[in-house]
Amino acid sequence: MNNLPSLDDLDIFLQVARRASFAAVAEARGMSAAFVSKRIRQLEADLGVRLLHRTTRRVTVSEEGERVYQWAQQMFDALQRMGDELDAGQREPAGQLRIASSLGLGRRLVAPALSELAARYPRLDIRLDVHDRLVDLATEGIDLDIRVGDTLAPNLIAKRLARNRRVLCASPDYLARRGTPKTLADLAGHDCLVIKERDHPFGLWHLQGPAGEESVRVTGALSSNHGEVVHQWCLDGHGIVLRSWWDVHDSLDDGRLVRVLEGYQQAADIWAVYTAPLAGSAKVRVAVEFFRQYFADRYQLPGD
Image 1 (cartoon, rainbow, N blue to C red):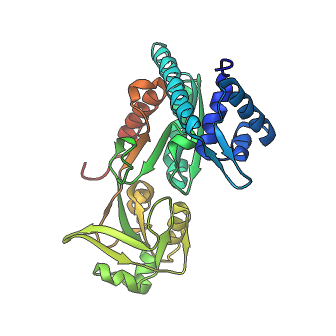
Image 2: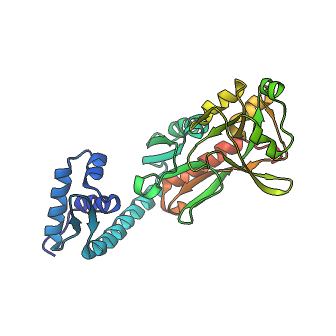
């Protein structure tokens, strides 16, 4: 080794290796691509090895670069654990906490919860990003994802925050005009309001019913990637929606919507999803426990 490498240069290298792009890392860090390239060249000079193979079309990690990547990742993980253990000894968690969620859940439930979390722990620097897609926690630097749905990748850790299910409902006006479906197959002849949200299949509803899991393909004139938009269309009498209890229970309680095919539902619990054990991060541990208590105090599925 020619010189001890800079920690910042190693961090830049890790990001370039993950994203296979100088431009993407430059944009994320607020630098020029030329500066990122310069730092990689300096790191290669310090280490005396070639870390990356560069062409006009792609960036790939060399064999030596793979070894450096593993060592650097272990080193940064150790530094993170050191910081987290020191944080755990403090009375108050601190630092940046990045949280992701879906559009509707993020606005309706997660954002109000974070308002209280920020007031309780003022040394946390909280950022909430809402998406209509699943996020990659590791590559996008997300500490915690609050999501709906029981399908989770094996490399992720999850803690259930609240039980939830999706139910079928429509407005009384729509049912007066079009009739009430009696069987799941009847939905194919109705206007259904379809949501494309995160990883949900578009236009294909899988539901648990009296005979076990059944599926039905539905169509309609209106669709959106935003659940709140579709909820409003349902209130306006445009069709039948499959929507989470947390979103529609107020409309069901006041009679603006009514359930149809009540024997069918779709499990869709609310989860806190993260990549490393909670013992290693005081801020994530505090946030998960806060969300668990927040939902326990304010949200309960009928029958629980």
